[in-house]
Image (cartoon, rainbow, N blue to C red; front, side, top):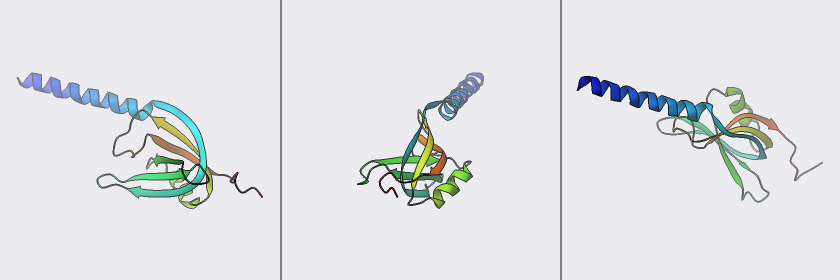
Length: 121
């Protein structure tokens, strides 16, 4: 009885670790999006995560929500600095997420300030 319990518990832990590794390390897609950075915030009750949004249209109808991992401190600092500006985001989309990683499946890895195509000088 005790041996079966230990084997079952070990199997559950191994399965969870494999699922976590797959979700964390295997990207579904990678890409670039640009728009006006309208929000960057750290939120959460049990696990605080960095979340943000960019507006991809003039009217603000197309909102792209994203998360930033805590380890990407430089990206977080740049996002805070570029608040309200037109930016280009490099992101990785994952198959799923866990609540301690972020609210979305899109994780920004780099950000660059861009000139808005709506207001050319």
